[in-house]
Length: 55
Image (tube, rainbow, N blue to C red; front, side, top):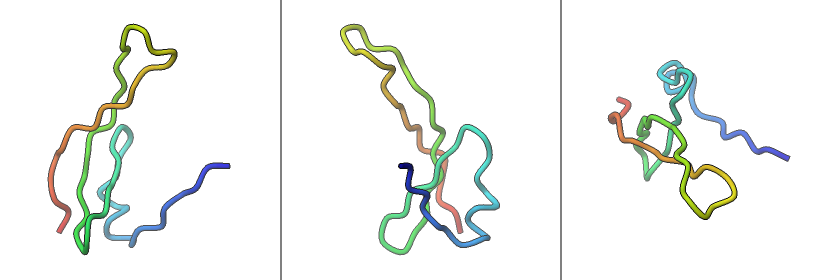
């Protein structure tokens, strides 16, 4: 079962394909979400790259 986090509409408007939103405290941050193959691991490991603060 996958759990979807509910963010305000103005935050969801910034999310496009290939990005994710994280909330820390009262702030929302936008990250680029990719995956990278790591030798010895069964599945690709997720990699988040910071894009910026959503205001």
